Image (cartoon, rainbow, N blue to C red; front, side, top):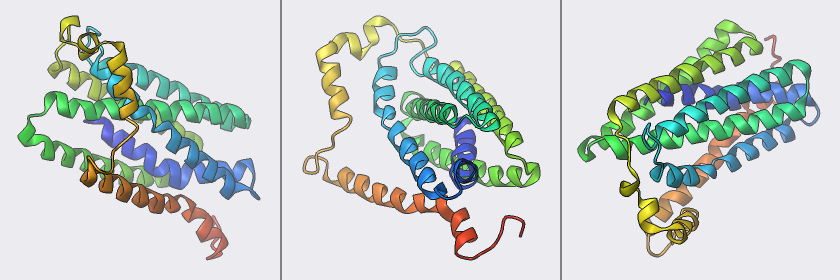
Length: 251
């Protein structure tokens, strides 16, 4: 679950440091609105998670169910981050936006499959410990990212740091999963047992949660949604410090 460390590095500093700076470079007057647009795009890309979960559950690749998605997701993430770096350097902001969408989709693909590995490989009595480890690695990654940014002091170098994080942490998760995950054969796949029509029903049900049949989980969903709506305000912390507290970047 090493990728959770890299995921913590990217998502924490991405929205509190990197994107606020980039939004300001695009337009100082409209920086808050642009940053809000980036956050909205990032939220929409998370809708890919249930789709990736269903597809990886039915994957018949010789590498196993999750590893192909981790591998190609990492490649897409590296490409996305590279073109974000190119876009910011040349100030081609449409290229930057497209590359950002690719990067966010890639992160969600990898993270979704990494969580799928818990159900695949971790004994039920150890699932709590595994989730705790993932949370700890996320927090450690978040703290580390701000320390590294402070040391580097240059956003171009920080993008290179992002690229290295994706490469090494995704590779570590891919390698460890390969030592444990068994290849799945055609006869073992729910996809072939159920048929396409049933899979389509599964896909639709992944985006709907009955408030009556699954009341407890529905309440969790609502509370987590409200929580993330509140946490998203942290992305505007840099602008709050600048505009309300009147502390300049030099200070």
